Length: 315
Image 1 (spheres, rainbow, N blue to C red):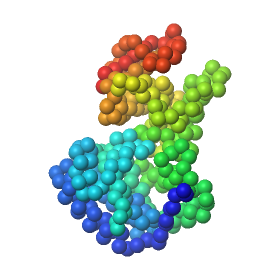
Image 2: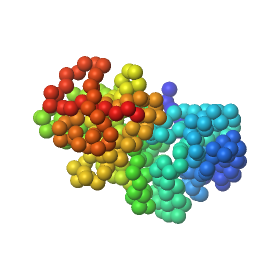
Image 3: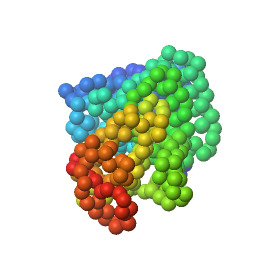
Image 4: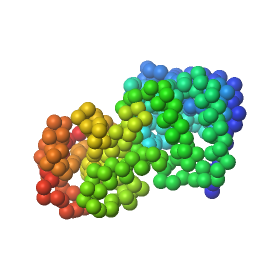
């Protein structure tokens, strides 16, 4: 069945609905709650939007928040494409989407920058409204393709990145590949640094839609500067199949920062150890980030390059 996407004119009652819901959420979270923000299109006066209130709650402990929120009928929906994001929703007389983050998560600043820019730049706000109208008229916008989101949502990505560039947003952030820009970046990194130099076509694109594999990109602001391919193994283990920083961004600590974010995310998912087969040229990178030489023990018994060094780390 085709997903229905409803975009309606701005409703001046939306901020009042937000205030009421924010009070209930703040009360449920108690001292765990640090901040609550109204975000998304319903937070921008004059902007047409889906009639769902988007909110961010900044908390001390996201895991504690899940139980607190479900007690008031707000259901946990998952991480989606943002590692260390906790997505919730409530449906009924009032529809809301709640995004829960630990303090200092870059998505908090990103959403506030985007909201405030549209509030203060009417021309850009109206351009966004026109884009939404165009997408609604396109039947293919209602489809989903290798993503938890419809094309309607994904095709707004380039506009959002354009606005963020204009705001000067420059935070480091990690995302799972989700829209065409990110999947094209994944292909670029894989072909440029791994398969292309050997003159072979990437044989593992099937992993792009396989639940045991995750494909991640590292942004600096709106620029993708690094990519990683992670495989989940049995026994709470994971393997780094590929990690690469764009050549013109090397020696600027992006690789180590990316690795730290990956480890934090995997540990949060319950992974106990992370493994890799390092080229000799990359061994120093792993060793300086706390990895040691340990057996790789690939559960699928893929043949290893005899020149690679197996390394790992307990999380």
